[in-house]
Length: 408
Image (cartoon, rainbow, N blue to C red; front, top):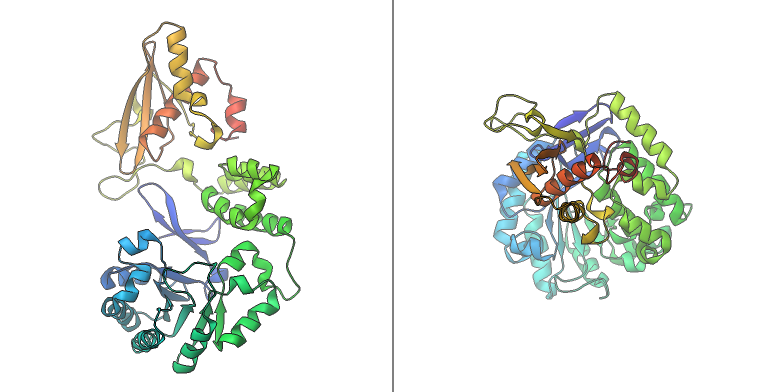
């Protein structure tokens, strides 16, 4: 866990590759509930204790029907494993100072659904969220609001109604759904992803306004480009096929996304502000040493590229979405150039540290590499090839900066 005072956030980071797995802040401290997918009580408690002081509650996911959850015996797989589910919930309830809840889906049989809900209630959970579709049903199927009503009538704890996004087009529809199901509150997923102003009493805001407002939050919190893109995709929906939508789909960095909505100046000024205050971004990530500390140049069995002699070095990232076809890839262009110049084919020497990779390419007796640590071997080699192309004059730095391969 890292407290980022520049952003005012608390970050939980995978230190092997710099990925932020969970980011929160004081503003949402008493509102955000962390939902976990697990099939192991001990592991669940370990994670919950880690975040206990930074979230308002812990929720056990027992409703996800995705294959990765089912194969991992998580999510909806727990509906068939009530003993495992109750053990996880009881362990969390008995050892945490914050509320514990769970989210389930209804079973095909009403009596078995009610029986399961009562069993889960007996673990001491503070509330239960129920999605009104079975594991095999999807959004096109009707939500079983009548079953939610029966569950809410049966249980003593608050029941949170879920699965009604199809019926909710405006703010007042939320309360209609709540009244029909007789539940204590309502949980929205798709409707909130489509337009989060669904929670506004004043009515829905235009999509353009929502995206711009969201993008400013994303920039202010240094949100990852991939997550930012995912959220905007859910807002755009069918508009992804428009001219703007297609440009958006080809974007890969926060700068590129902001540029599409005329927020590039805001993005760059914030980026500069963060850097001046000492915030490290993904580009500054280096692998962990065996003792668990960040590798900042201490002694190691393997030499870093920056320590190699006679290597032309640049801090250059490879961004796959900048290249429409394989023929445009740096390695392809470099390979073709060496053939045309009747030189030996490029030779790549790649090293791996933890989950990260760096590569050196040798061309015509000279070596080139990027100091940027990539998440896979192929991208590391492409990055090295890109540095070589720049050094050979086959690509200029302005183009690299425009495409966000190098810092602007």
